[in-house]
Image (cartoon, rainbow, N blue to C red; front, side, top):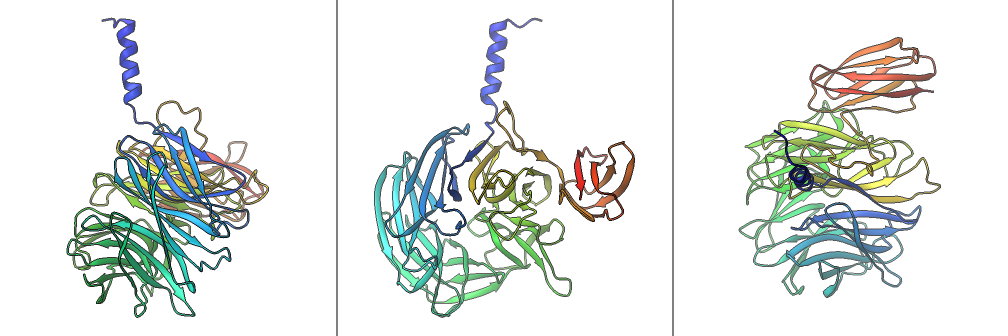
Length: 485
């Protein structure tokens, strides 16, 4: 049966419009742009917050930055906020309703010591029009490294942060604000060395705090006076990804560190815990332990809309700073609610990427946002905000003419290399084969890889260019060039 052309055109147009929008977006200027938070509105518009810094000075938050793109990755607007003789960054974005966003910001002096700090709270509409703003000045000799905002009980919200004074260890403070941005409660926890990382207010008004580096949960009673500490069931370091699926249970991604006598750093791992502090019931999954190559996303490494499709993200081949002179990749793992892996993919290899945050989107896909440093072409440090919108399989669909980044299921590095190379295999493939050929097609090396890591000796090979092939019977097939120097 023939379908009339007009009907066929309508059908093709319908499926094209119904297809999940995917894109790659880059915000670039001669300055550094760094993202802290990412938010998708109900209509699909995407908002991000962060700051701008000078070259060679990425940690100094010179000016606050807000950005907005549509669901197709098209630029809508950016806003830069500056204060005379002050540094400023926008941190958290909390949607209040369909048309209003709460913004938490931090203002400090220009010394780089994070002193003379203020909490700056703003209400803005979806076009970044300012509705209301209030500022709360903290003691001038406190070094306030960061603070983030959270939705609290009874139409309030909380701001929690870390601070130092004199030579004391880092401690935690918490503020409660009402819907008019007025402070109605505040406490600095001087007597407890709580290095805050994440916070949640439980239904009974107790505060649950996740600590940054000592793998503990902290419960603060409803009067904010009594503090109790509880060990995690396994040792996870920050950075974290945290998502509560009920009032009492949550999923937590972090940097996994096995304890002595077999201590080894670091790898992505996830806990599903069924009670805020009771660790007698939990699920735990980690995907191989190698070294400090895999690292969770800086500001949020786990998210879901439907907990049967959990997105976990981070960076592979990470360095000690926000920029490096070698290739790196974002990685995403998608699991079901029981933490069984569906797929893992890698994105990058042509620049130095560092994932800042991953969020699940309304259409079942995900957004990953990070910094991109084009070390091959940049003459000095220049970090750009980089955002990918992917479908529920971690892929781009539709017109891909503007997509520059590559997607892989196996990667090889360092490249160029010398006497050994590492092979990173997606977590869904338990066994694979690595083969290396010279330019004449002669096979010079073959090795079976079990699990996601392979460490291959290439010391016996001559310097030159080789072709690699990585495959298995389950559908993995990746090829590329590897150069030995």
